[in-house]
Amino acid sequence: MAREAELRIREQLSRLRSLPLLRGARLEGELERLQRQLERIVAEPSDEEIWRSVELARNADRPYTLDYVERLLEDWFELHGDRAHGDDAAVVAGLGRFRGRTVVLVGNQKGRDVKERTDRNFGMAYPEGYGKAMRAMELANRHGFPVISLVDIPGAYPGVTAEEHGQGGAIARSQALMARLRVPIVTCIIGEGGSGGAIATALADRVLMQENAIYTVISPEGCAAILWRDAGEAQKAAAAFKPDAGHCLELGVIDAIVAEPDGGAHTNADEAARLLGDALAESIELFDGLAGDDLRRQRRVRFRTIGQLSTTA
Image 1: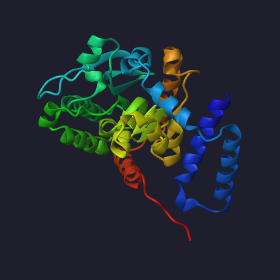
Image 2 (image 1 turned 90 degrees about the horizontal axis):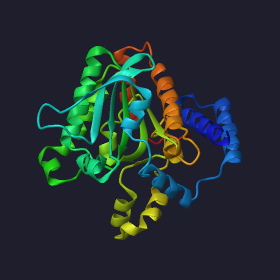
Image 3 (image 1 turned 180 degrees about the vertical axis):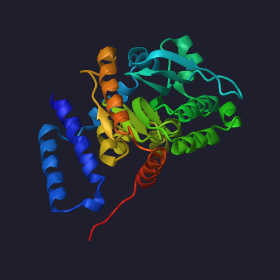
Image 4 (image 1 turned 135 degrees about the vertical axis):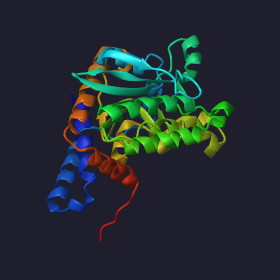
């Protein structure tokens, strides 16, 4: 219960901090009250706790996209191929019924055993994967279906073939398409949210993040290799750029944290799916009745203002 209370307070703080134009005595007082309440519940995560989030996000038994599809969607119909080069098994896309409504779902899939991991390229997408995701999202836009995006990718595949097929361009086109969609988009980071490979399918009206997921511009190992010429300093790098859900919420990169079962999502996939399903349903309902133009306008404002700093006199 204490953990769920912490997540709710963190979300309230994040929402209040995103209202700089409304700041005043009452708002500042509410911010201070919530901050004090949060400090009583939990202290700043230690470097070891941040690294623990990295380890849990990468846990081989953690539920992947298809595990959640099995538990949350009915009448699932998977799409294959980008209608240009081929099919990329690292990206899953399709349609299904989610709590009474048809949705389009796209997500990353890593694989369980050696063969499946090889077939799915360890979840690292080629341009064909983003092409397939865009096919599905265009279908959602055409028929007015909400889009759910589940992100769990170490990063887009950096190999020669992927570059020859236009990896960077595919990521950019996917983001541009999501910015234009006239239907609600809800994203959740369910494991690793790595670099451009993650943001390619995370430009959403509401971005969620599971409690033990991570969201980064670079892997801890990659950051350590650049800064200290030693990938073994990954824990030190993670402590520096703080990819855990709590810090991502404080930065305003995400909108809410989805609680997980004690010990992590891999300890109880059914409960993890229930918690995720509740959060997704609540998020989609926030946008019921909003016109497509309003959705696009709000979405663009949201991402154009991420990272902006404001000063007060």
